[in-house]
Length: 262
Image (cartoon, rainbow, N blue to C red; front, top):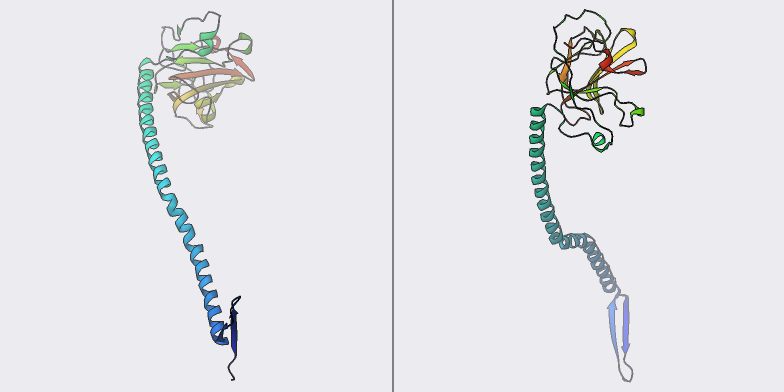
């Protein structure tokens, strides 16, 4: 009589008798606790395995995507190899030609006549340049070279150009046009590897598209001293030397300054 129980009575409509169950309170609590535990286990299992099942369902799609990407990477590798080979062949042609084999699009489309290329060095006896600082008056190359593009200001109607482009193979010595001091030496997007010299009289000379620089900033140089090697760096379509002269803020035509061609 001291045990507490829960009585459950079920009476069906139209029936004369009722069904009665007496469940001990401890058993009812045990059933409820077990039910709660089972529900929690079901929820925990769903939270753990549902993401796994979701990812497992994606595996076939991921496999197909990986196969597609591998095929595309293979094609890209083949294209890159072909492009590298074409660039190597083009570079060999440029080195053999020693000049800009791609026509200037501005000169090509201009209605004005374009002057033919000329020899940049005239034959003559080699003279010994003076030591120490001097105004730029010497040709910056041992090679004759070909002037493929000259000085062009805004008034010319063509794309502005601040000096001479001299076609010369890669690796030829580039010499100082006059004695002075290395004002700057380094890399730049337009000129590539370059050297800027400071000369007496407010003159400065620029040597661009070099493959190698052989002087350092602040170093004194004599006229005709090697300051670098010709190249094809920066904004350049073929091996050449960009050579320009300034006096203060004004551009000077190198053809008017160069008196010694050797």
